[in-house]
Length: 317
Image 1 (cartoon, rainbow, N blue to C red):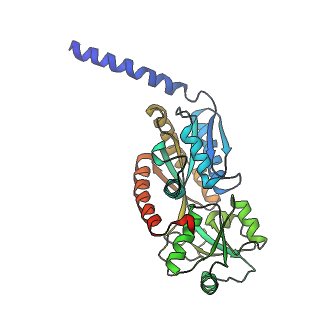
Image 2: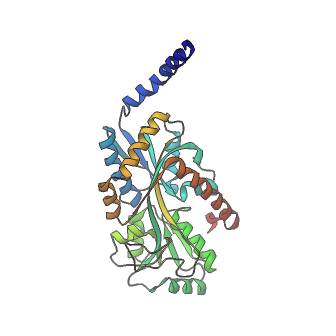
Image 3: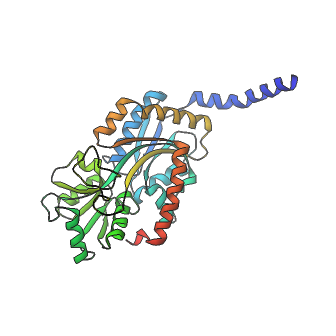
Protein backbone atom coordinates (compact mmCIF):
# COMPACT_ATOMS: atom_id res chain seq x y z
CA UNK A 1 0.00 0.00 0.00
CA UNK A 2 0.97 3.62 -0.40
CA UNK A 3 1.01 4.03 3.40
CA UNK A 4 3.29 1.01 3.81
CA UNK A 5 5.69 2.27 1.14
CA UNK A 6 5.89 5.69 2.82
CA UNK A 7 6.43 4.11 6.24
CA UNK A 8 9.23 1.94 4.90
CA UNK A 9 10.86 4.90 3.22
CA UNK A 10 10.65 6.92 6.43
CA UNK A 11 12.23 4.08 8.42
CA UNK A 12 15.05 3.92 5.91
CA UNK A 13 15.68 7.65 6.26
CA UNK A 14 15.79 7.35 10.06
CA UNK A 15 18.19 4.42 9.87
CA UNK A 16 20.55 6.10 7.41
CA UNK A 17 22.41 8.32 9.92
CA UNK A 18 23.03 5.35 12.23
CA UNK A 19 24.34 3.24 9.35
CA UNK A 20 26.61 6.06 8.19
CA UNK A 21 27.85 6.64 11.75
CA UNK A 22 28.69 2.96 12.15
CA UNK A 23 30.45 2.87 8.78
CA UNK A 24 32.74 5.71 9.91
CA UNK A 25 33.49 4.15 13.31
CA UNK A 26 36.16 4.45 14.58
CA UNK A 27 36.91 7.98 13.44
CA UNK A 28 39.87 8.42 15.80
CA UNK A 29 41.86 6.20 18.20
CA UNK A 30 39.85 4.23 20.74
CA UNK A 31 41.04 4.75 24.31
CA UNK A 32 40.68 1.94 26.84
CA UNK A 33 40.96 3.36 30.35
CA UNK A 34 42.45 1.01 32.96
CA UNK A 35 42.11 1.76 36.65
CA UNK A 36 45.41 0.19 37.70
CA UNK A 37 49.08 0.64 36.90
CA UNK A 38 50.81 -0.91 33.92
CA UNK A 39 52.01 -4.48 34.35
CA UNK A 40 49.12 -5.79 36.44
CA UNK A 41 46.59 -8.40 35.34
CA UNK A 42 43.90 -5.91 34.31
CA UNK A 43 46.38 -3.88 32.28
CA UNK A 44 47.77 -6.93 30.48
CA UNK A 45 44.29 -8.21 29.66
CA UNK A 46 43.34 -4.78 28.30
CA UNK A 47 46.41 -4.71 26.06
CA UNK A 48 45.62 -8.16 24.63
CA UNK A 49 42.03 -7.10 24.02
CA UNK A 50 43.13 -3.78 22.50
CA UNK A 51 45.43 -5.46 19.96
CA UNK A 52 42.65 -7.83 18.93
CA UNK A 53 40.14 -4.97 18.69
CA UNK A 54 42.47 -3.07 16.36
CA UNK A 55 42.53 -6.04 13.98
CA UNK A 56 38.73 -6.21 13.86
CA UNK A 57 37.85 -2.52 13.65
CA UNK A 58 40.80 -1.34 11.59
CA UNK A 59 41.66 1.59 13.86
CA UNK A 60 44.12 2.36 16.63
CA UNK A 61 43.54 1.40 20.26
CA UNK A 62 45.51 3.04 23.06
CA UNK A 63 45.64 1.99 26.72
CA UNK A 64 45.41 4.75 29.31
CA UNK A 65 46.35 3.82 32.88
CA UNK A 66 44.64 5.96 35.53
CA UNK A 67 45.25 4.23 38.86
CA UNK A 68 43.71 5.36 42.10
CA UNK A 69 40.83 4.78 44.52
CA UNK A 70 40.54 1.09 43.65
CA UNK A 71 39.68 1.87 40.03
CA UNK A 72 37.19 4.65 40.76
CA UNK A 73 39.18 7.40 39.00
CA UNK A 74 39.28 5.49 35.73
CA UNK A 75 35.63 4.45 35.83
CA UNK A 76 34.59 8.00 36.68
CA UNK A 77 36.48 9.25 33.62
CA UNK A 78 34.73 6.70 31.39
CA UNK A 79 31.32 7.58 32.85
CA UNK A 80 31.90 11.25 31.92
CA UNK A 81 33.36 10.55 28.46
CA UNK A 82 31.58 11.37 25.22
CA UNK A 83 29.36 8.34 24.46
CA UNK A 84 30.54 7.70 20.92
CA UNK A 85 32.42 4.41 21.31
CA UNK A 86 35.88 5.99 21.32
CA UNK A 87 36.32 5.71 25.11
CA UNK A 88 35.98 2.32 26.78
CA UNK A 89 36.79 1.19 30.28
CA UNK A 90 37.90 -2.00 31.95
CA UNK A 91 35.90 -3.22 34.92
CA UNK A 92 36.93 -5.29 37.92
CA UNK A 93 34.46 -7.17 39.99
CA UNK A 94 33.51 -6.79 42.73
CA UNK A 95 34.74 -3.17 43.03
CA UNK A 96 32.70 -2.22 39.95
CA UNK A 97 29.55 -2.59 42.06
CA UNK A 98 30.96 -2.16 45.58
CA UNK A 99 32.61 1.26 45.21
CA UNK A 100 29.25 3.07 44.80
CA UNK A 101 27.95 1.14 47.83
CA UNK A 102 30.74 2.11 50.19
CA UNK A 103 31.02 5.79 49.28
CA UNK A 104 29.72 8.67 47.18
CA UNK A 105 31.46 7.52 44.02
CA UNK A 106 32.20 9.19 40.68
CA UNK A 107 30.11 6.55 38.88
CA UNK A 108 27.27 4.07 39.23
CA UNK A 109 26.33 0.98 37.24
CA UNK A 110 23.74 2.88 35.21
CA UNK A 111 26.46 5.20 33.87
CA UNK A 112 27.69 2.42 31.57
CA UNK A 113 26.63 0.37 28.56
CA UNK A 114 27.90 -3.20 28.91
CA UNK A 115 30.05 -4.76 26.20
CA UNK A 116 31.09 -8.06 27.81
CA UNK A 117 32.88 -9.78 30.64
CA UNK A 118 36.04 -11.56 29.45
CA UNK A 119 38.11 -13.01 32.29
CA UNK A 120 37.92 -14.50 35.76
CA UNK A 121 40.89 -14.89 38.09
CA UNK A 122 40.45 -16.22 41.65
CA UNK A 123 41.64 -14.11 44.56
CA UNK A 124 44.48 -15.71 46.49
CA UNK A 125 46.23 -15.27 49.85
CA UNK A 126 50.00 -15.50 49.61
CA UNK A 127 52.84 -15.43 52.12
CA UNK A 128 56.61 -15.19 51.81
CA UNK A 129 58.03 -18.63 51.04
CA UNK A 130 60.50 -18.31 53.92
CA UNK A 131 58.09 -16.64 56.33
CA UNK A 132 56.37 -18.12 59.37
CA UNK A 133 53.13 -19.11 57.64
CA UNK A 134 53.19 -22.53 56.01
CA UNK A 135 49.40 -22.64 55.69
CA UNK A 136 46.35 -20.42 56.02
CA UNK A 137 45.68 -22.13 59.36
CA UNK A 138 49.00 -20.74 60.63
CA UNK A 139 47.99 -17.19 59.69
CA UNK A 140 44.51 -17.56 61.22
CA UNK A 141 46.00 -18.93 64.45
CA UNK A 142 48.40 -15.96 64.70
CA UNK A 143 45.60 -13.47 63.91
CA UNK A 144 43.42 -15.03 66.58
CA UNK A 145 46.20 -14.78 69.17
CA UNK A 146 47.28 -11.26 68.11
CA UNK A 147 44.36 -9.28 66.65
CA UNK A 148 45.32 -6.55 64.15
CA UNK A 149 48.99 -7.60 64.17
CA UNK A 150 49.10 -9.76 61.05
CA UNK A 151 49.33 -7.42 58.05
CA UNK A 152 47.43 -8.11 54.84
CA UNK A 153 48.01 -5.95 51.76
CA UNK A 154 45.58 -5.45 48.87
CA UNK A 155 45.35 -3.13 45.84
CA UNK A 156 42.46 -1.16 47.33
CA UNK A 157 39.38 -0.97 49.55
CA UNK A 158 36.46 -2.79 47.94
CA UNK A 159 38.60 -4.81 45.52
CA UNK A 160 38.16 -8.57 45.33
CA UNK A 161 41.41 -9.04 47.25
CA UNK A 162 40.15 -6.82 50.07
CA UNK A 163 36.63 -8.27 50.19
CA UNK A 164 38.15 -11.73 50.37
CA UNK A 165 39.74 -10.56 53.63
CA UNK A 166 36.47 -9.05 54.90
CA UNK A 167 34.58 -12.30 54.34
CA UNK A 168 37.40 -14.43 55.77
CA UNK A 169 37.60 -12.30 58.92
CA UNK A 170 33.85 -12.64 59.36
CA UNK A 171 33.94 -16.42 58.84
CA UNK A 172 37.01 -17.05 61.02
CA UNK A 173 36.25 -14.51 63.74
CA UNK A 174 39.64 -12.80 63.44
CA UNK A 175 41.00 -9.32 62.62
CA UNK A 176 43.98 -8.56 60.40
CA UNK A 177 45.63 -5.21 59.69
CA UNK A 178 44.63 -4.20 56.15
CA UNK A 179 47.05 -1.99 54.19
CA UNK A 180 46.73 -0.73 50.61
CA UNK A 181 49.20 -0.57 47.71
CA UNK A 182 48.43 0.68 44.18
CA UNK A 183 48.98 -2.47 42.16
CA UNK A 184 50.49 -5.90 41.66
CA UNK A 185 54.19 -4.91 41.43
CA UNK A 186 54.02 -2.92 44.69
CA UNK A 187 52.26 -5.79 46.45
CA UNK A 188 54.96 -8.25 45.40
CA UNK A 189 57.70 -5.87 46.47
CA UNK A 190 56.08 -5.33 49.87
CA UNK A 191 55.80 -9.06 50.51
CA UNK A 192 59.28 -9.96 49.28
CA UNK A 193 60.71 -7.08 51.31
CA UNK A 194 58.95 -8.44 54.44
CA UNK A 195 56.99 -5.17 54.82
CA UNK A 196 53.74 -7.16 55.10
CA UNK A 197 52.87 -10.69 56.22
CA UNK A 198 50.31 -11.57 53.57
CA UNK A 199 49.08 -10.20 50.27
CA UNK A 200 45.76 -10.50 48.51
CA UNK A 201 46.70 -10.94 44.86
CA UNK A 202 45.04 -12.95 42.14
CA UNK A 203 46.10 -16.49 41.41
CA UNK A 204 47.24 -15.62 37.89
CA UNK A 205 49.49 -12.78 39.03
CA UNK A 206 51.16 -14.87 41.74
CA UNK A 207 51.58 -17.88 39.46
CA UNK A 208 53.22 -15.74 36.78
CA UNK A 209 56.01 -14.69 39.20
CA UNK A 210 55.97 -17.23 42.06
CA UNK A 211 59.56 -16.78 43.23
CA UNK A 212 59.80 -16.76 47.04
CA UNK A 213 56.00 -16.79 47.35
CA UNK A 214 53.82 -19.43 48.98
CA UNK A 215 50.16 -19.38 47.97
CA UNK A 216 48.13 -20.45 51.01
CA UNK A 217 44.62 -20.43 49.51
CA UNK A 218 42.52 -19.26 46.59
CA UNK A 219 38.92 -18.13 46.34
CA UNK A 220 37.62 -20.02 43.32
CA UNK A 221 34.70 -22.45 43.46
CA UNK A 222 37.12 -25.31 42.76
CA UNK A 223 40.86 -25.89 42.51
CA UNK A 224 42.53 -24.15 39.60
CA UNK A 225 44.03 -26.15 36.75
CA UNK A 226 46.95 -23.71 36.93
CA UNK A 227 47.63 -24.33 40.64
CA UNK A 228 45.98 -27.66 41.52
CA UNK A 229 47.97 -27.95 44.75
CA UNK A 230 46.42 -24.82 46.27
CA UNK A 231 43.21 -25.43 48.29
CA UNK A 232 40.11 -23.28 47.99
CA UNK A 233 38.84 -21.32 50.97
CA UNK A 234 35.78 -23.55 51.01
CA UNK A 235 37.98 -26.64 51.26
CA UNK A 236 39.66 -25.05 54.26
CA UNK A 237 36.32 -24.60 56.00
CA UNK A 238 35.46 -20.99 55.11
CA UNK A 239 32.32 -20.30 53.02
CA UNK A 240 34.07 -17.70 50.87
CA UNK A 241 34.34 -17.43 47.10
CA UNK A 242 36.00 -14.42 45.49
CA UNK A 243 37.57 -13.63 42.13
CA UNK A 244 38.48 -10.73 39.92
CA UNK A 245 36.17 -10.61 36.92
CA UNK A 246 37.35 -8.33 34.16
CA UNK A 247 35.11 -6.85 31.52
CA UNK A 248 34.70 -3.92 29.15
CA UNK A 249 32.12 -1.11 29.17
CA UNK A 250 31.27 2.01 27.20
CA UNK A 251 29.60 5.17 28.53
CA UNK A 252 25.82 5.00 28.77
CA UNK A 253 24.20 6.58 25.74
CA UNK A 254 26.63 5.09 23.23
CA UNK A 255 24.67 4.72 19.95
CA UNK A 256 23.14 1.23 19.64
CA UNK A 257 24.74 0.60 16.23
CA UNK A 258 28.24 1.37 17.54
CA UNK A 259 27.60 -0.62 20.72
CA UNK A 260 26.45 -3.58 18.60
CA UNK A 261 29.65 -3.39 16.55
CA UNK A 262 31.81 -3.34 19.68
CA UNK A 263 29.89 -6.27 21.16
CA UNK A 264 30.18 -8.28 17.96
CA UNK A 265 33.93 -7.65 17.76
CA UNK A 266 34.37 -8.52 21.45
CA UNK A 267 32.49 -11.82 21.14
CA UNK A 268 34.69 -12.69 18.18
CA UNK A 269 37.79 -11.80 20.23
CA UNK A 270 36.64 -13.95 23.14
CA UNK A 271 36.51 -16.98 20.81
CA UNK A 272 39.84 -16.25 19.14
CA UNK A 273 42.35 -19.00 20.04
CA UNK A 274 45.19 -16.47 20.10
CA UNK A 275 43.36 -14.30 22.65
CA UNK A 276 42.44 -17.34 24.75
CA UNK A 277 46.07 -18.48 24.71
CA UNK A 278 47.16 -15.03 25.90
CA UNK A 279 44.79 -15.24 28.88
CA UNK A 280 45.81 -18.78 29.73
CA UNK A 281 49.46 -17.80 29.38
CA UNK A 282 48.83 -15.45 32.30
CA UNK A 283 47.12 -18.28 34.21
CA UNK A 284 43.67 -16.71 34.00
CA UNK A 285 40.41 -18.30 32.86
CA UNK A 286 38.48 -17.03 29.82
CA UNK A 287 34.93 -16.21 31.00
CA UNK A 288 32.99 -14.55 28.19
CA UNK A 289 29.56 -13.26 29.19
CA UNK A 290 27.59 -11.04 26.77
CA UNK A 291 26.67 -7.53 27.77
CA UNK A 292 23.03 -7.59 28.85
CA UNK A 293 23.23 -10.99 30.56
CA UNK A 294 26.41 -9.86 32.31
CA UNK A 295 24.81 -6.67 33.68
CA UNK A 296 21.70 -8.56 34.80
CA UNK A 297 23.95 -10.76 36.94
CA UNK A 298 25.86 -7.74 38.24
CA UNK A 299 22.62 -6.23 39.49
CA UNK A 300 21.98 -9.39 41.49
CA UNK A 301 25.54 -9.23 42.83
CA UNK A 302 24.98 -5.59 43.73
CA UNK A 303 22.06 -6.58 45.98
CA UNK A 304 24.23 -9.19 47.73
CA UNK A 305 27.01 -6.68 48.40
CA UNK A 306 24.55 -4.14 49.75
CA UNK A 307 23.53 -6.77 52.30
CA UNK A 308 27.19 -7.47 53.12
CA UNK A 309 27.76 -3.74 53.63
CA UNK A 310 24.80 -3.59 56.00
CA UNK A 311 26.23 -6.54 57.94
CA UNK A 312 29.91 -5.59 57.98
CA UNK A 313 30.91 -2.23 56.39
CA UNK A 314 34.21 -3.16 54.75
CA UNK A 315 35.57 0.41 54.55
CA UNK A 316 36.09 0.08 58.30
CA UNK A 317 37.81 -3.31 58.03
